[in-house]
Image (cartoon, rainbow, N blue to C red):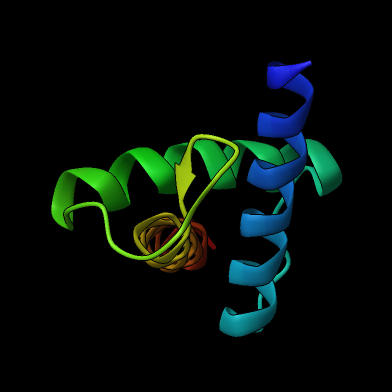
Length: 81
């Protein structure tokens, strides 16, 4: 059951990061989950565990990492056009 909670929290973090950035994440729900997981990894490498931990995700670093990830992906996709 823990993995399901992690998928939900990862998806919500990716979704929130997309809303904050004003960008759609390619891949829909799966893209949100991937952005949440990768964002969590990036955020926890850059920032220490800050704020509350929900579903094995430190919320603030995960959200900041997902925002960074979305910004980089948006920049790369814009440069491909």
